Structures are given as C-alpha cells and as structure tokens.
Length: 451
Ligand SMILES: Cc1cc2nc3c(=O)[nH]c(=O)nc-3n(C[C@H](O)[C@H](O)[C@H](O)COP(=O)(O)OP(=O)(O)OC[C@H]3O[C@@H](n4cnc5c(N)ncnc54)[C@H](O)[C@@H]3O)c2cc1C
Image 1 (cartoon, helix red, strand yellow):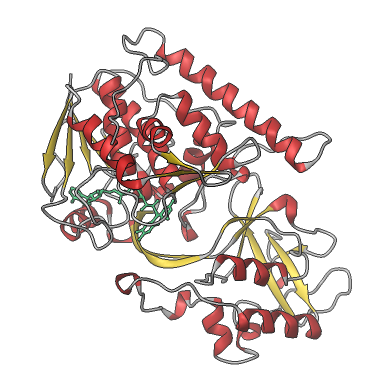
Image 2 (cartoon, helix red, strand yellow):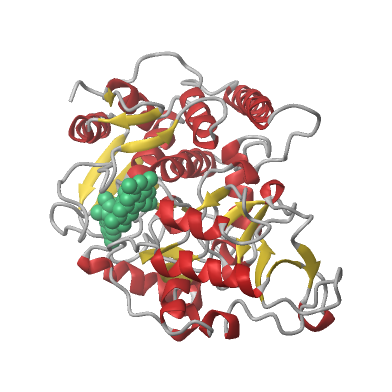
C-alpha cells in the first residue's frame, strides 16, 4: 500500500489526514508551524481559525447548513470538534477557537495511523499519494516549486473577485440578454438612465471599504482596479470603463442606455452570475446596497461577495478533476483554499474528499465524486468546470446544485433542496463505505479531546 502524505494541517489538511487514516491508509502529515509561522496564524495548533470563529449559518434553508449536515454524516473530525466546542451564536455554528483547534491537534497527534512531522515542505514528495493543503498562505518556497511544476499562470496570489448573484433573483423584465456589438448574447445587461446612474454613483462613492491587515494590502493592477477606486477617479470614469454602454442597445428601445452593468454566467446552468469588472473591497453590507441600487438587481441575492485580498489558489478548472486529483498528476490531490474554495467549512469539506480519494488511490480503488445534488458534489464539479479565464474562489451556495422546480416559497424550495442533497449524499456514503472495515458511517466516538 502506498503512503498518503498530507501537506498542511489547516482546516483542509486536518480533515484529509483524519479521513485517509479512517479509510485505512498510513498517513504522514506535515505542518510547518511553529517552526515557520504564517503572517496570520498565532498558534502551533492544527485547524487554527485565523479570523472569525464561525463555520457558517445553520439550518435547512442555508447552503452552508447543508454542507455541515453532509460533513456530519461523513463523520468529519472538524464537525465533531465544532459540536464539542460550540458556543451560542444565533443561527450560526460558532466555536471556542482554542478548544476547537486543540481538540483536533490532539486527535491527529494521537492517531495510531498518522505520523505528524513539524517541518516546512519545500517540494512535493517523489512517491506515494499526496494531498496538498497548504492554504492561502502557502510558504514562499513551496509556492515557487508549485509554479515551476504547474506553470506560472496557474497559481494566483490575490483575489480580485466581483460579487456573484443568484440567477433567479435577477429581474429579467429589466435586464436584457446581449453581447457587445451584436456578439453572442451570453451576457445579461442591466441598463441605467442618467438619473439611475447618478443615484448608483452616489451609493457607490459613499460605501465604506473593508480595512485589510497590513500584510494583506495589494498594489492594484490597472486590469483589476476595484470599482470603488474607478469611481473615485471621476463621475464618468465607470461609464467609460466597466459600465460602458457602447454597442449594447436595449432591444426594447433600440437605444444605448446611459450606462450598463453586465453580468456573465459563472456556471453552465446559468444559476450564478458575476458582475463584470466589478471587483470590490467594499464592506459586505455596503456592497449589497451598491449591487441592489442597479436596475434589475434590486432584489439580487448575493451568493459570493466581492473581495480584494492576498491569497494563494490554483486555477482549478484548468488543473483538477472533481475528484480533486490533478489531471496531469493523478496521485497528487489538492484541498482547501488552494483548490479554489473559500471558507473554513468548504476547506474542511474538500479536505474530506481529498483524504477519502487519497486513501482509495493508496489502496488501489477508484476515486469518487459525491452526487451533484449534494453541496460538496456541486462545489467540486464547479471547481473542475468553471470558466478558467476569470476563475475566482467559490463558497457553498444554492447556485451550485440543481435548482428545485415547482411551486412554493423560496424557503420551502431550499428546504427541499437541503433534504434532497443530504439524502443523495447519505446514499453515496452508504454505497462506498460498505466493505470498508472502519466505515465512515460508523457511529463510534472519535476521541477529539475536551480541549
Ligand atoms: C487572514 C485570513 C482570514 C480569513 N478569515 C476567514 C473567516 O473569517 N472565515 C472563513 O470561513 N474563512 C476565512 N479565511 C479563508 C479560509 O477559510 C481560511 O484561510 C482557511 O483556514 C483555509 O483552510 P486551508 O486548510 O486551505 O488553509 P489553512 O487553514 O491556512 O491551513 C494551511 C496550513 O498549511 C501550513 N503550511 C503552509 N505552507 C506549508 C509548507 N510549505 N509546509 C508545511 N506546512 C505548510 C500552514 O501553516 C497552515 O497550517 C481567511 C483567510 C485568511 C488568509
């Protein structure tokens, strides 16, 4: 049996190592802290939560709630530690961070099939099956190595993401389909009159910016200037930049509007749409006001907010399969922020799948992909199939799984999607865990420690 190497013991690596070991693999887990710290981590513990202490909203109408439920069903270490160390936080799963990460550290350090090596990895191991989970702050030496292995253009070092809205929340009585100068009508266009543009400009220039940590600050390239910065340069600057109406006549009037916000599909089903040229570092509440001040987006549901910050992630659609294996290097898998997801929970969930598939490869079995109705299945399919030309990291949201048709209020449809997703996911778990000696569905208590 080949050995499984997991590099990085953050949210993704911790879950990957635990899952691979549970599936019967021998695991070597590398973590560079405390020998070498990142600019954000403060402790030597595994799965340290570097900022907020929340793993997202719970409940049947919440996309993160579905991912949490799937992780619980899969026997996730992160979820067990979270339950053990949860603190009251309204409708969210928040944890006492020190106890949470100490519990995970103890569970992994004490695991008979896991050997922990506290050392910075400079290059990928030459043999075995490897899960790469070094996160948004991958060390410089390893980043260099990855660049030379995968190609310069496949490793991004900052997020310059525009907000993404749910297709069903766009008012199609207002937004029209068209491509500039009559090119293929792949875009949705939100037209503005002069008065609407004036109001939009006012909301945009009054919106507050998120304050980044010093080490997070970016030098903006002209090509990915935040929309608020473009607006600061002059009243008409957005109208001659990303909001340019030229070549986009409104088919209902035959006239070019005063300004146009274009939206481009983010997924094949057209369930998620991003605002073109709208990368932004605005605070989320203010960002929502700006987006909803655009005609046609008054009721837009934002499924991923725009961000501008330092990050390290791969151009997943060019490199990986939904199994989280590299297409060109099948014994190399990737999980966490590095594979193009955003968020603690999403990182841990991809860690689960990468750990599972790494163990299967080591044991000579075929790697697996969760069903498309599940949130994890939707997320990994998105990573492998999104538009590679403007790929930006993604979090759990309802646009990733097939929409639920039929009648009913939004909350009822979401609850149906929740139950459908969890049922498919549980069926999938039951199928493959049959025959595995220590099945993932085993209800046995995993010693996560009391913190
Ligand atoms: C400053 C900051 C704040 C964030 N805030 C939030 C938030 O509030 N909520 C949220 O959901 N998400 C947040 N994120 C995004 C993301 O969810 C977290 O970064 C999450 O921890 C990612 O999990 P990961 O496993 O991919 O990476 P990490 O948890 O960072 O784990 C990667 C691990 O790899 C180790 N490592 C790196 N290089 C090497 C190497 N060469 N050899 C060995 N070990 C190595 C690191 O020390 C680290 O322990 C934040 C990200 C950053 C950078």
